[in-house]
Image 1: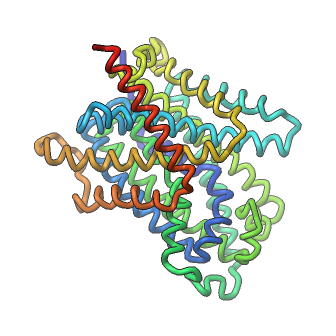
Image 2: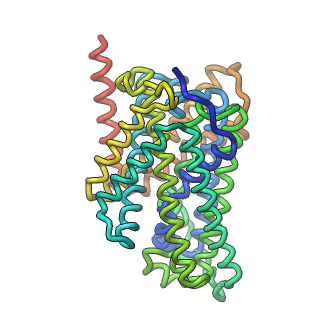
Image 3: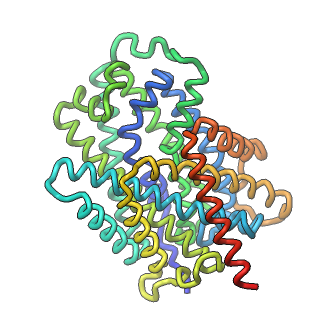
Length: 420
């Protein structure tokens, strides 16, 4: 039994955008500006180009191998064995940690404006999105599309109000006060704001005409993100002084208050919640599809590879991911969650780019409806930048990321021994 192909170009693009524009962008600008100054706009541009280089590899592989599991399937095609297991392991776990961060962020925001208990909010959110995902990918895709379009409309209002309000004199002078190294350090810091477009790959088995739709959706999402993020950063730096930004935990709300008054603050608060929910929805989808593919291939217990008879969704894999999201949400340590996200995605990005290079060499005649432009430059850029940016990571994130990978290796090796 297999899943249904029910998502079109709009659904797939909104899946990528909704997954990526997370609540982090609403708070991450202040520390990013502290690192790079007004040149944070350049950091967002360069980070977007780096991300696009890797997404082009996803485009080629997704169009050529549009099966359930995304990057796990790509690496299995190229390497199999431990590399493919680790790719699926990090894809599954990183999306769970990502969803956990979104749940915690939503709970904190809602608990601040309501009298509801945070644990009640967390449980309710996870249960609602679990139910929606089990009911079918069309329901999850429709919800994602509506929420993401609403989010984009609010962000467009934010940008437009900023330009109408006008910018401070000499707002971008000096443009690069801390030099080029600070711009690069800011790229490493904001990297997670571009993580999420690969959620399209996770749903590629449920996308109509994937040979064309997957590349188009990924490129549309990646380019839109670059434009949106650069404009948001440009408006934020232009309206509010750097000193004020450095002391703010909600920089976009600060700008919205200056340009639109209390209405802007309310809209940006709503946008923050929507961003968290769209990211939560797509992270559940991505993690469950990874678990399902690994279950079908014997890397996870085979029960998680089952597809619901009526809804055509990997219902047990969805429940598995949701249980772990609830479990990690009880760990009152955001650092633990944040440190677990970017490392796993960077490992996945590197392995996908390596898989593209290996498959080009080993299977030159494989059908490729989309060919990555500027090959081999783009996958090499993706590999080098993903690994190089880890230099700027907090040492704790590296230690935990490596330890988590070693745990995966132990599980994989124990399963292989059990089969002998």
